[in-house]
Length: 482
Image (tube, rainbow, N blue to C red; front, side, top):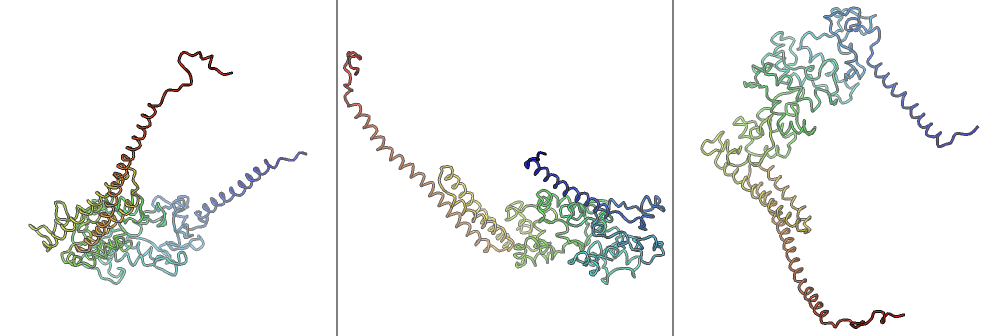
């Protein structure tokens, strides 16, 4: 019998091995996934809460197992009874009303404690995540949502109110505030890092907006005596932060929870706005903290950074915000004709000097850039000066940061460094342009003797006698050689 060529056998074996190995794990993975979401036949919850259950009716809450497949608790092996208590098997089942282990949720005020039954238990939580936080419920009761909910509980039954802190007059009873399930969901809770989770960085603002952009829901709600409003999301979405996160996908850009907090969400106070901004803008926050203006802002009840840059509607800062020209932020308070919050004329003069100095360096940078481009267009080597010009741009950026020190001297020192660079770069570019001019002059000068020599050669050639190799009228045949 003829043997099959090796060139055919080897590819066939490789295909067989690849299909034989790859296919079963795929089916096994599907089986494992499906088995993880299927409850045992004698699982007691199915009796009432499954449409196929014997005691199910139209008024019974139903949770489909397929919707639980992506739930983070479900994936960790937790089932209904792990959250709700009760017996998972029919043999041990008791009526919920008679079962002391059953944990029911009869009102929204019970939800934080319901979730906290596990999430506040460190011994339990570290079985799943060794570094899991267990202070979310405690933080929640300090939040704006939690304080209003606690006030509503105290109003109904002071003995049932969680925590030891007494509510204040500002804590108005409100049962409709957000709880755990309003942000995370209830059945089908996704992991925080899941891109589809309502608390994923690119989705959390929309989650907050479900309540805070609802005009009817927010009507009548106040914070520190002022209406809460319902346009925060619209402003944030158009801000530099919102565009960076949602349009550019920059996960480092802040959303609601980065400034207000997560479970302990509260608007930053007047004296803490700069600290909230300083979480990202550390250098600027330190400069502001070391200046007298911080205390002036606090005394006047001004919210630090937000006074000049806005809160939710933060835009890209521009140099036009500085100075005393029309539209400048400084002129809002330091207006000589109508000063606000104790603003002084000295502050107006400082703002004017800062702006003038910034504009000077900007002009010098533009001039240096133009000179470099002119040299480049003529083919001169100016890569070194162009690279050095970056130092001037860095000095300008540093000076803009130093504005937040509210001192003219540090800003002028930073700008002086930039002016030194622009002066050096401009001089180098001018030298390149002068070198180009000198080269053209030398080229022109060198052409003169060359043209003179060529002219003399032409004249010399014209003086040479004509060739005598053949006389006029001679027969060509007679001068041809054999």
